[in-house]
Image (cartoon, rainbow, N blue to C red; front, side, top):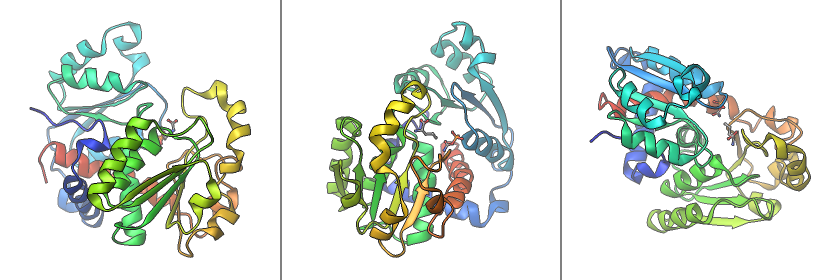
Amino acid sequence: MELDYLSVDDLSPKELGELLDLAADVKARPDAYAGRLADRSVALIFEKPSTRTRVSFEVACVQLGAHPVVLSSSELQLGRGETIEDTGRVLSRYVDAIVLRTFEQERLEVLAAAADVPVVNSLSDFEHPCQALADLLTMRERLGALEGRTLTYLGDGNNVAHSLLLGGAKAGMRVRVATPVGFEPIPQVVQRAGALAVESGGAVEISNDASAAAKGADVLYTDVWASMGQEAEADERMLVFTPYQVTQALVEAAGDDVVVLHCLPAHRGQEIAAEVMDGPRSAVWDQAENRLHTQKALLLRLFSAA
Ligand code: CP
Ligand code: NVA
């Protein structure tokens, strides 16, 4: 049976640690992995916009010797009503893996069930598991071992928050998520992350108090207040989310060596103050770069090529 990566929870804590080790090695010694995926093809389907994910996956494929086929749903028959199952069945006859950015998580599950090749979630409304790999690698680079470290996420309890909850808990971190009332991460994910934290020695804390959550944090993380598909709610959300902005004051309330992360794209003056985003504690550009290295490691693992 083929492997899929639809959720951070598809990796055991051990596999996650090993994947991050591999990503660090891929980053340190890219030439050692060049050409490992020669003669492979990877379809990359985007039903939502993307800058980082699209370019980093495409370049990852090329650096490993694979051929990326980048497609938007509007240029596929998918945009004219062909089912995701039939698309998966057909693409499986041409390519060796399918990477999909879409809306419902269920669409990825349906694709994975129909396809005969590995399927990767490159963002759904529910999770952003490729982003979490880059986030964890960046935190490891800055902090060393992650066990017992505090990761505070401020803002919307969205796809990025879900993947961080699962990934941080697997890595033994204390994951704090502070959101406005009504925007908490979904209970199913919080419960699963809590169970993982019990096993790893980490912790999961959900609240509506940004200041308390930021106090003493090793990492402050935020994401957009209105995700792709929620544009119509942007103005309304701005009103309730303003107290959750990552400000200089919150950075000062965190640990002295706090690392500031943002999956990007960022809106300075909304979820993050410009002075924080562009300030000395920000690691966002390394974080964005790490999308490339972690996705190379993921592809190598899916093809058992490392
Ligand atoms: N962080 C992230 O996934 O960025 P893109 O939407 O640009 O791919
Ligand atoms: N939560 C954001 C992440 C973008 C990378 C979104 O889904 O739009």
